[in-house]
Image 1: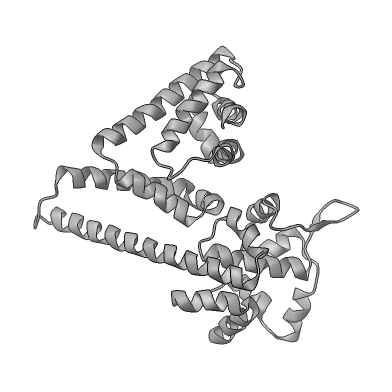
Image 2: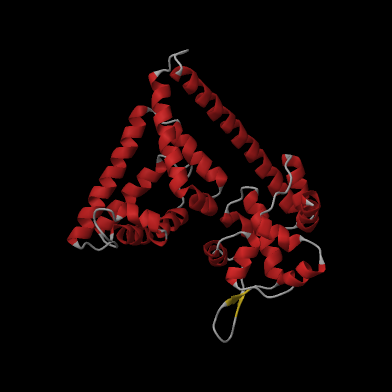
Length: 301
């Protein structure tokens, strides 16, 4: 039964996605709710033709309500609204489009890249998927490197070899990366894509001890200036806001492969929209996350 459902999913995905999946060498593994939507008996076909609320579509697809709202904010979904209560309503076209979005997310595409992809011709989309496949292979190479380092660490712990000081600090940074992935990885990868986040992690991992300490010192300066500015009631659109924004840009520059003011502002907005980031910046002085967002929105360029 599982093979039949996967076959149906691939047929529904079309030749373009089958091409990508076959080149990667994996099968199309969909969540159980989405498989239910792809099954072909009469009862479930009828269910696919119905109108869904956001909660019903979340249950059907396996995507959270928060994710569906995020896709709408990003312009990927455009449900109509109930004229009586304003609730979002999703039809069969919305279900099909969400499936395309989830397939592309499953292939590691960032949300910001999915909109243009959906508007491309089949040939253009295939070329984009081929390029993405090359990036996935590079990611696999990096994972192989990480596995090798982990194996050396285990060997060292057993006393068979001795790690260099550089390798020891590298393992400490790896712990920081893993902690960050557990806390924020899903949200960041959703917004910026796997390639961007993997690139940031790689830059952190490859930092020298001096560069890492400088990076952490910059973060401490940002927090100190941010908290003093909020306590003093400074205007985030003023000189103090410009200074904090510039420090934050320098801090990002030590890990981001390239700087974008738009991405900087997007990250700042997430500091407020995601309670985990807000809690980090507001843990000593409430209001810091909002002040930082306003400063970056006002001054990032």
